[in-house]
Image 1: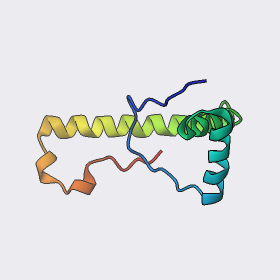
Image 2: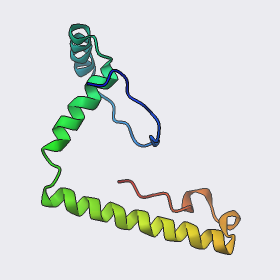
Image 3: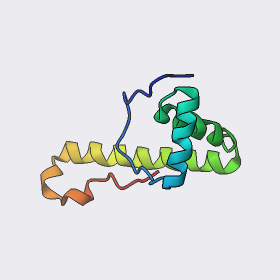
Length: 99
């Protein structure tokens, strides 16, 4: 198991709040294992997600995300070609795809 979580290549996305009770329990596991809490959470989420990976729903969401990223890439390319970035409001920059 990894001893540290690297942030290299990471993105700033929504990070949900965790109930204080779960944090207390997680801290106890940290004391028992000696591993950082971030490593424990990362591993727990990885194991949980594996239950869903490969399902039809997972594949559909993956395809939808790829399509959204392709649309955003195309939008940004067109905006750069036409040099329109200075003409739009900041929230209209095409980064509203949330998954």
